[in-house]
Amino acid sequence: MDDFDYHAVVVGSGAGGAMAAYELTRQGIKVLLLEAGRDYDPKTETPMFKTNHEAPLLGSSNKDKNFGFYDATVDGGWQVPDEPYTTAEGSEFMWWRARMLGGRTNHWGRYSLRFSHHDFKGKSRDGLGADWPFEYDDIAPWYDKTEKLVGVCGANTDHEDMPHSAPGVLQEPPKPRVTELLVAAAAGKEGIRAVPMHRAVLTKSQDIRQKCFYATPCGHGCSIGAAFQTTTSLIPLAKQTGNLKVITDAMVRTVDTDSDGQVTGLTYVDKNTGKDIKLLSKVVILAASSCESARILLNSKTDVHPAGLANSSGQVGRNLMDSTGAGIGAYIPALRNRPRYNEDGHTANHLFIPWWGHDAQAKGELDFPRGYHFEIGSGFREPGSWVAGDFQGYGLSVKEEARAAYGSYISFALRGEMLPNDDCYMEIDDEVTDKWGIPVAKFHWKFSEHEINQVKHGLETAKKIFANMGADVGDLPAPEDAILKGGQIIHEVGATRMGEDPADSVTNQWGQTWDCPNLFVMDAGTFASNPHKNCTLTILTLAMRNADWLAGQIKQGAL
Image (tube, rainbow, N blue to C red; front, top):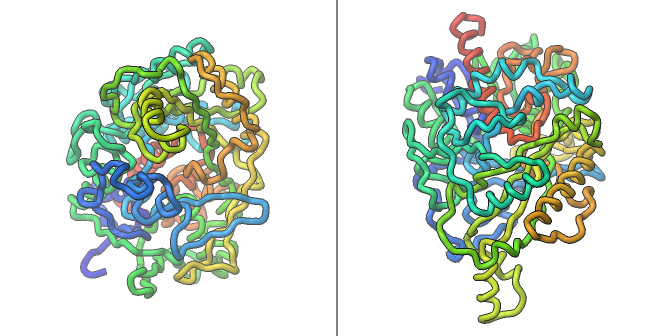
């Protein structure tokens, strides 16, 4: 392409793709990066200082802006124009696509929790799911490197569910809010700890990014780069090497192979012209997101690969998992009419409640095998459409009640681990195509009793904590009704699972597909399990580690 003599093509510019491109280009390897969405410049397009009263519907969510009018995702969501997907009868699954340079890193919550020794070897503990093909100690040094590069604030807490970072890695966390200290005291009465959240937000400036000034919601995007997204960090840093070229509006149709079934490159649709562009490449890296990468592989079937590319195991599209999710909240009388002051911080929770029940599970005292955590919502939130919905009446009495209750609400968002099951997978719907004639994904979904029992336990625990704060949450919903839909948490993983055996996995521990040595997957599709912790930090860490390994292979002439 032109005079850019690239060695590898990376598909996707989010956490996995951008990190792979950064690490390869840093080591002198030329990379062509393809992004299916449009170009995006956070320095000029970010509505950082816009307030809800300036927006339609007071900035509330709608079908085009799932997380509110000012959400940093410009064109994507659970429904994307011209890009349908289907679900099997009796299944509900919501598939988020960002479709912009930087992918989901532009809008993610930026919670950056390490997986632990518990998480990588879950099957060894309870016989369920699959183990990862390495130990925590193997990846711990790479977590350190990633946290340092990304800029994660937090603290080492000596909590069994939160492995330590090396000295000097973590930046200083913001101070807890009064509301969070109240939660910590209430949870402590149940023997449960609240600790600082680890978050990819700079509290100290580094490289080309400035520290957070605690003023605008991270979900709006961040033009100064304090809130981590690849468009203000990894991508510009990789461009500075001179080894990266980026092409946006490039929808990959297939990974291409020769008569022996080995990868030679790929074909993408230029969405601006509708024309197919064929690229040759020595190495292809898929990092388009778990389900999109699997969709590409399944659509790349040939006579040599009749079930889809890299799918001799039959596992492409299988083992699909999302985090479990449920919400519960209450008005806290003790917080009524509390003094007003600036407690914004980095806008998300400063404290959270990690999973505390590993010992109880090991003793067989719980009726579900994997854990969850609580993210805390509280503080003096910017008024929006929720004000009109929370209070009855009109005029002065409503204003007085809104002022008195302002800052007195606390909510918990439960996020838990889901186990893979045979009812949750994706395939290709041969009867439906997108605008460009590419067959779409079809989803099958059903939670198991493990997830239902987990949510039940979480709701009951949350109710006890709220009661300790003097709040009454009322009757709890049935867990089957409270659990959020598959895909709704946007943590889908596992559709190209890694492993130690080509018979039951798609890639090895380096993301290298067993069937095609020069084809790699470097997104959450390779996850062998889906711990309750948010997955982006581990996507970034694996991509750095695996791209470093790949760079070594390229330099040795093996690839």
